[in-house]
Length: 345
Ligand code: ASP
Image (tube, rainbow, N blue to C red; front, side):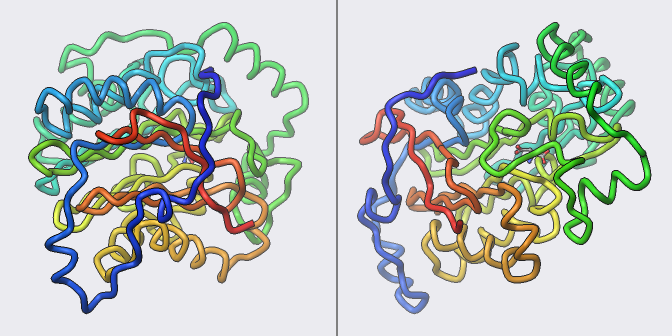
């Protein structure tokens, strides 16, 4: 697992010195200098991922290539137990991956519940570029990946297998009732929960957003999902509009945290639409979270959900339900630093 690097607690609004733009002041938006290239990504492992993305961006490469290369870094790291190789398995011991990618033209590709392939993000990109579809799941996604030459391998590392076997000792697995207990706000019961507020062990996705030197945006999102989830469970991360949304005219957003909460509010699409209305990215992230808080306050208090966003000008914003959400920022002025977002609780 990545160690914490230099840690900067700052609000992005203050840091980037850009105030909320009134909707009517579109003119000012147009003359604002665009920060580029730029890459941002979720959690501490974003630092290494950003470095790989930056290598492409600084040479004039495309944002799409940068985000794919960036998130492949944690996907390949067996010590990161929440993404790709070494991800914690579901309740039945299967490591199943979810990922999606989106480019500046509004093209999107995704895979869900994909087994045996390390680089789910690259399979998602192939879905986008080589098929008429947006998402492939399960066995179909695996067959497609194999047809594209991706190597098949065992993703369950000895330490993730050990963690799963430990979990099995206390897990009360009742397929019907526990689905509801684990995932429904109405029946939320921490006994069956595989997550805790602020807990970064059981769930942590990498979501990455980039702007290239041409000023184009792309994003990528990849995860092994909630640890010890039910077999077949798909979270928010591969869902366009939940785990990731990119609109080249407006901005982009990505998410991490309990996917079920995010899917209910189409979180990243909501964040981008709020930016379109003129909200600063940080405020857009907060307003999206407040939709959940308003409808399901007890549930929202008991989980983590965080958004990270950037607008077309390169203004960055983030917000989380709980404290402890970190994200990595790499711009011409900020050489890869870890920040912590504000939080509602
Ligand atoms: N959003 C992911 C999921 O629900 C997990 C995470 O981001 O921690 O699968």
